Image 1 (cartoon, protein in one colour):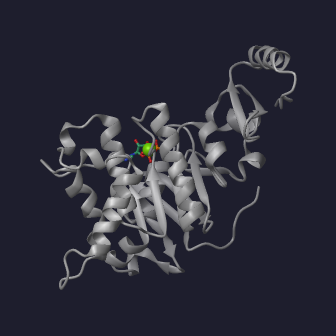
Image 2 (cartoon, rainbow, N blue to C red):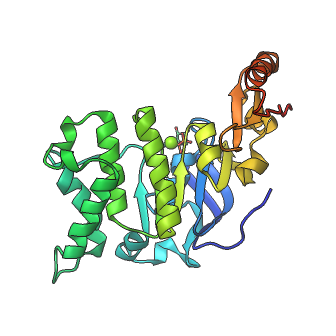
Length: 288
Ligand SMILES: Nc1ncnc2c1ncn2[C@@H]1O[C@H](COP(=O)(O)OP(=O)(O)O)[C@@H](O)[C@H]1O
Ligand SMILES: [Mg+2]
């Protein structure tokens, strides 16, 4: 397990709770700069709770989230919003707002009392809408969009904020497979071309393994494993975290770990068949 030791965003002895229910207890975590970190884990294990705390939407019960070494609680909200963008799992849009207006709200942290809207804001909004394929929806009401369209609008708003750190909670939910890949490729692109640090919660383990530089597996509010997907995604981990039997093989296209769910004897047969079918692709099963 490789744990990064430096990063602009970190959690120190972080405890998160709702009233009398503690969800995360004494968590230490460093988000590596300039990388894509993906958080995976079963439902209700605390992924959203953690992400909201990293974005200061949730106040810690104990410990702290540190940005550049300073407790978030001591940094002005606007300053945080210029640095960290957060797309929550279920964001709520104001009533009767258009797509263009919602995306424009992403620029609020960059506006000043003496200048409400600049050419730079215009460019950032146009760019974000272009990249998420929502330009044609600009004048539509957000309420009247499909789930997938709405999700892309929210991503556009987060992108328009143009923060060095971007936290995305299940950004591919509601999206069809083509738009899922588009969003994941976009995350990669932002990371590669613009050096953005991204933290995303993803449901699909195989997408996580393919797109993450750094993978964090959580269970019951604890980090069970972290590191490169090739180091941490194993049948043992899938069993420990999700209680699921599987076989992990190298993805024939990308080489990243590919989790084939199912009882080992079933998956073993499937692997054997696919290896027979394409003799030039070497598939080796890793069993736990
Ligand atoms: N606003 C809330 N009030 C009370 N409990 C909550 C709230 N949000 C989440 N929880 C609880 O905290 C736990 C972790 O939730 P969450 O972080 O949303 O999990 P995940 O994103 O991993 O599915 C769950 O047991 C959930 O029921
Ligand atoms: Mg969640």
